Length: 76
Image (tube, rainbow, N blue to C red; front, side, top):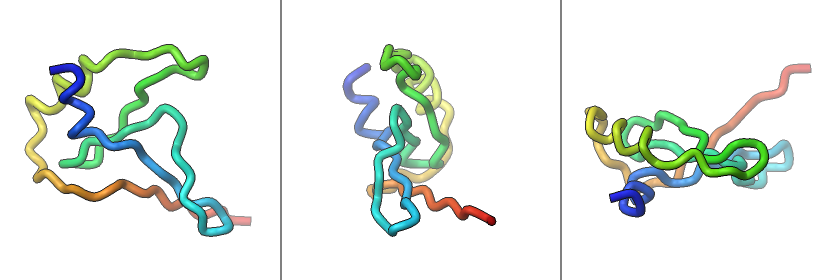
């Protein structure tokens, strides 16, 4: 079950100021409701998949087969 959970938690990408998609380091999101999870700490140590497994048991969102992309605006 642990490895199967990644089918429902794709990696998350953000768009940089140049319009390039860049992977958000150590983040994934539920393919159903888009709730984000950090799967590793800043040093690269895995947190495990228990939170994602528990989330899927309760999530009421519909499965979507698209890659999540985060856009953030920088106000100056």
